[in-house]
Length: 391
Image (cartoon, rainbow, N blue to C red):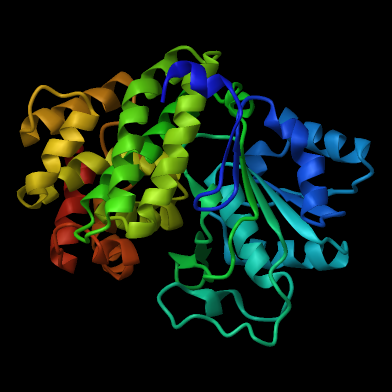
């Protein structure tokens, strides 16, 4: 993608309708009308609730006679009781659609609310690891518009949501194959105010999505091609987005990279995410940051299995050869350049937590699609490595 193309509007139809381009939030009322939404519930996380894009969206809707309410009581690692509360607000307010705004937590909260707001089906009936929930007697899911305001999670085009089961102390994936966002609206102008630190953390999240998805040991050329393009864009634009926060091309490049990463990981993820999900559930750490810190230890563990995948990934990162050390060192240098903490201990994760985290991570679906099979003991050693050594 050429830089100039990042400053112009584009409409894409795969895998869901996507409207990309600076300023496209101005279309939000028109888009709601087209989907039959007259009274949307705007959902975001606590950290985003007072940011200008929320008020701007409500103003744009009001100007076209469209009512709205904001629900922002969503934690950085969304919890099951928050989803229940959001469902009550949706029903009590007579809402007929949801606009998800913010980073991954806001969008995950919104998607989980879509699963449950229209019926009395329990949230955990939609657990990804269980048979698909029977919704034949339930109303259809409300229409969902996803508006990412960070460039990392890629949650805007798929139905999965990571929610913390507060009884089990685990992050679990919920979904239903018939829940699809009706529209993903990618407006890079909404990310211009994102602080450098969050730009870095979310940007590495996008890169990790692409790397882990590409390494999943399944033949899926569609996701593989998308993952490599996501790596290429993140490598091209991430440092610039952090160092030049007003650079709209860089912001756009990272939004597209994040979107591609989210599409790619329909193929699966790996141990970085399996570990990060459980660290986030137990220690409430930022997901993108946790991914970034866990990445080097997981790469060292996965090194013997990377094989032929190193060549295309190295090429996507513009490296001079396809040796593991070159690939690994380039990623560690990127983390250094972005001032990413060096170990999980820097995030407050103690060595005593490694065993329990490993047992939980082993149950995560992402562990099952890691390129190298890992036992509970091996995962525990990777976690200890990430805590004690890092990079």
